[in-house]
Length: 156
Image 1 (cartoon, rainbow, N blue to C red):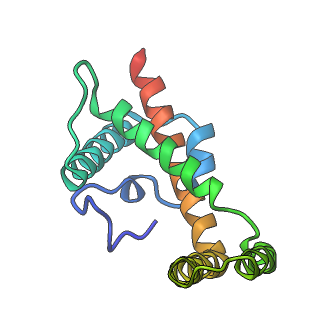
Image 2 (tube, one colour):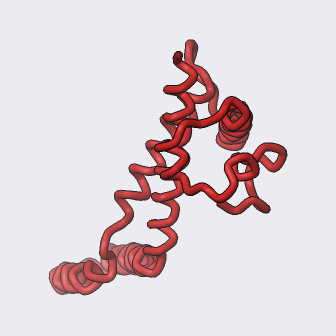
């Protein structure tokens, strides 16, 4: 986790849990001090997320559950983007080429060419961003795991 550029600079769980990976945090029990720091961190993180996305909490919803749902949805999105995109570029190119052969109207053809090039640019970008997508998926997984652990510990 980048401690210099966090959304919540005043509270950072890595300050409390030094030299432990996220997996060891999930396995080991968390002290009361660490639990308090995690609570402050996740509440601040959820507040930042709410204010930046201009969303409102549903009635009866609390910040940890809201943040957990958002992290899980983000993880699902990033997981769906983890495809071998470079393998799809030739397939898409061939499909669009065959489509354009049978297209006769010039305006429609020009619009389709423009949209196709935008799509291919997006696919190329995704194929070059595989490592970033994987890191974002891992980040969301670790954050939601820590939050789930915290929520389970605080139910008691």
